[in-house]
Image 1 (cartoon, helix red, strand yellow):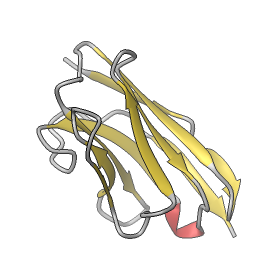
Image 2 (cartoon, rainbow, N blue to C red; image 1 turned 120 degrees about the vertical axis):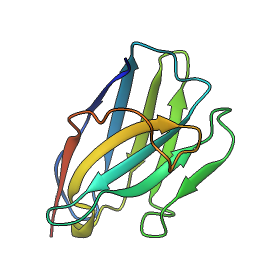
Image 3 (cartoon, one colour; image 1 turned 45 degrees about the vertical axis):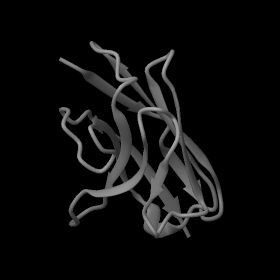
Image 4 (cartoon, rainbow, N blue to C red; image 1 turned 120 degrees about the horizontal axis):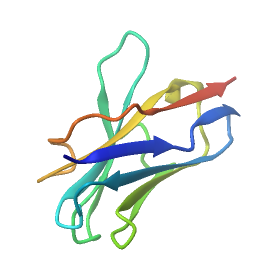
Length: 119
């Protein structure tokens, strides 16, 4: 059973930055793609960013492209999301997950971390 714990969220003003972390335990995820997802109030969870297992290819939703950067440290079983130039529409609970492809999560969802961007 893989346990995912997200952290690093908070309240930030528009234009600010945050760095999210997702630590996995229970299984090494170095052979899986990793992804970040978010869910805003009243909306469905959506894909935000992903990285292939070999730390090569990265994928981003159009809404965050150029502002967010995903990275991973396989030795620490941890994935990160650097978020710059934050906008109020980025406000959501952010989750990480893993799978054969970054946008096809197969794990159980963690508790997420709240990101709130004030205007």
